[in-house]
Length: 433
Image 1 (cartoon, rainbow, N blue to C red):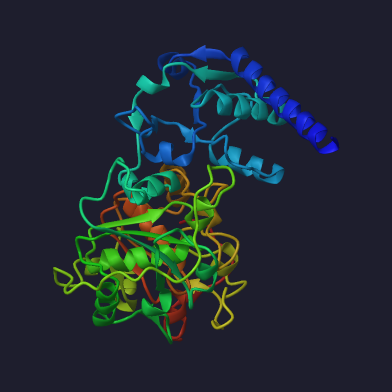
Image 2 (image 1 turned 180 degrees about the horizontal axis):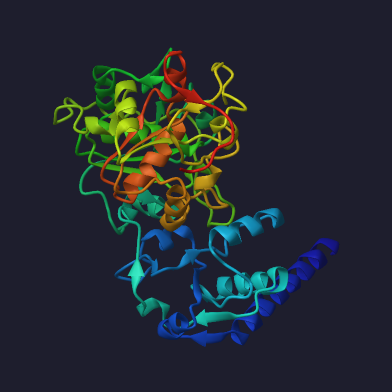
């Protein structure tokens, strides 16, 4: 009896919240796209990031977001101390007009949050957003989301389906201990120790890379879908596969956490050993197909001398200014003299500057603005690096999704650079030149 009463009260409480949200939504004045433009309103897309990035909703022929919109999903769980930074990054000010669009429940929830907790006074609902001009991530289909992957896995018809054979892999460091306890059904497993080797943790030889790919049934024309408990690990594998010449490499946005997110419908996991795919007899093309995606120390030095070059440090600010090396096995502190700061996160295991609150990729406009502060622009010859390559690979993959043409990973990064005392380094606070 007591339990059922609690359930009834909880149900009534949830219903009251939904009703309050509905009232808030109905009270919002509506604007057309042209009217919002005339008011210089900021557009907010409250949908999940996959629709914002480019995936079409059911019934749509085209995905993406309203031109100029920022993504502020109603599904994100944002801590109070995160809000000021997020609003600033998205260019949202409480005294400026804002036009929200998407699912009406989420519009109501986000509008209520902006009004009640952050003092926004000019909130509108965009009435004709589905017919407004759209834009999207250049390679949106390479950044997949959980529901799409589940539909593909079940054999259902999906948008941007692989053209031929496809394979799914979790990527992680070392033995698949966490994988054995739970993973996406049907996934194989790739140990990053097969992709990079000591002492510098640089890429293994091309012969060893090809051997790994063939062992896992991967040819140049195989669609490979990768995810990780840490997206950096999956991005490391994605970068090497693109370097090798795999044409269709896709990344699960948000990784395994996105698959198990309690706020999306429950998706299955399974326990046990990885799937073993039938080995491929040949890669199909000469490996590597894209050697330009990898830069060594001489290449990094050359980029530093070029007027249109950008050697980009994807490291935390304390690493960049020399307060810490970031790694227990790297002693020297500082960074490469002449490098530009590309942001990363709070430490060597974090890429939060690149992520939404749910761990998915931030919208391209935010990443571009972050990079442009340091003169990192699409027209430059850009080589990303970090300590040993994982964070740099994630930054590389996002730039590739934006269709940047001249990009690479400086594989040796700070670790290899700092091992030669003759290489110029710098420490201390500094600003963009």
